[in-house]
Amino acid sequence: MIWQTQQWANMLEESGQADKVLNIWWIFAEKRSIWLGLYGLFILWINKNLITKDLVETVKKISIKEKCLFFQFETLSFSDPKLHTDNCNLKNQYYKKFITEFTAVIELDKSYDDILAAMKPKWRYNIKLAEKKGVVTHIVNKTPANIKAFYDLMTETTTRDSFSWNSYEYYCKFLNTVQESKLLLSYVDETVVAAWIFLFDREVSIYYYGASTSKKKYRNLMAPYQLQWEAIKIAKESGWKYYDFLWVAKPDTINDPLEGVTSFKRKLTPDIRHVSESYIWINSIILYTLLKFIKAIKALVK
Image (cartoon, rainbow, N blue to C red):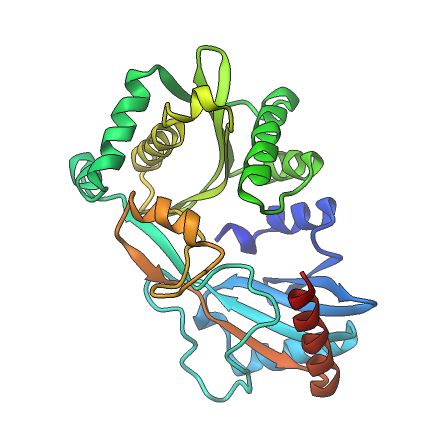
């Protein structure tokens, strides 16, 4: 997957997302600052079959050498993400979750009619409505002006929906370092009303970042639905196996922060899958417990 490639490691270091990226057995591990000079080592989006006792022992030694409080694996699999081994001395938990346990997918070997039929009727209607209202979507060049158009809409979206976002410089670095990334913009006449960043990686097309206008006169044009449909068609025509919506709430949970985006994604596909598990090894239980306690207190204060 894209997250275990050299270009992704370069993007993390150049954008400051990770303090250091280590190459361990052709696996990339991200050293990240977690609090006041403390570090964690994160090995993310890895096939569970690569996590062996020998690898775990090697990562232990490296995490100690790098003065990391813990190291954490996150698996990624569309069929079964669980690590079926008891001899690695890892706990099935995490310090920070980088990818949610569940995602929404579309299998792209289905026909266009079958993909549309699986959507909620209202959502199929919204796609047609957007097209009727003149919304058009294109893959655009990763120019400063186009990235700025995306960033401006992201600012509107995050202000509207009350969540955090990255800097303009980060999105420039992301798009221009990760070759598999594509920027799609939706227009009404010459106005950009929706913007999405996708990763087209091997068998999977991933909806990574999305933004849309808050202006009332454009909100009823349903541009995000038409944009998603265009991205699905691009992924299917490119021969990818899955269209991955990324990040959905765990089924049957209440007040999940992802509840809003999950509702949107579930109406485009009913296929919700358990794709990720987290496993951790802790170097100092006492210090780690203290850190988790402080983290919990900060969350309560917010």
